[in-house]
Length: 287
Ligand code: G3H
Ligand code: ZN
Image (cartoon, rainbow, N blue to C red; front, side, top):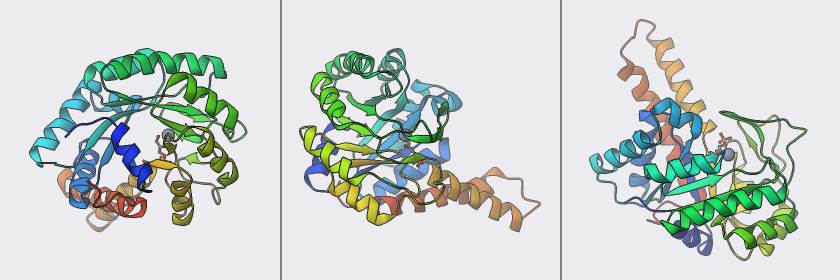
């Protein structure tokens, strides 16, 4: 069934695992992610960026597509449809109206007071209709769709600001940037675990969210979960493994032109990647 992230993440935090947010890019991603969740008996969060929603046909189309596959596959595990990096109050409201069960308002590029006020406005509207809200502080480096943050600009979240934002807005979870990066890492990721521990202790038990889940070593992911992360976002890794499957298929069959013959393997690759992440995050068999 379609649910918000609230209960999913509270349970995950209490039981020391994380639920994966896997981003939808097209129909094959949607199929693969929902099949993986059902086979792993894992709760799942379908992440939808504004750019990906535009590509697929808009917020309403995405909600309809996810619902249609939940029905077609008899999906029994909890599924959230979550706006990823919502860029404005208006965008979050549109997603909620279209049936998203969760939204992220990414006010991280605003000064703190503005981030708090825009996040609060979203929380008021979302909570009135049972939709969960994720906020962000600090800057996650790299690029995702329309969102580009220079390395120099990427900055760790400040613990006192995290506390203030959480207390003043009532958000359900917080993405506190601590050195993770969207897209592939240039070198080893360097997560700020000391600060992570400090933030986790200051925000009154609400779950933390780890963006840029691609390429973070398993030990670091496990440590981040121990320090309060109950949601890990993954997109690039599924994109890389599925693109590789298309390249391999077309290299082996240069005359091939049937999309089902090269997108089928891409879909299988996404499913394998997502199932692996669910096992790594500890969410398998938790639904
Ligand atoms: O919001 C989505 C993510 O943070 C995805 O990050 O593409 O590096 O896996 P990634
Ligand atoms: Zn992100």
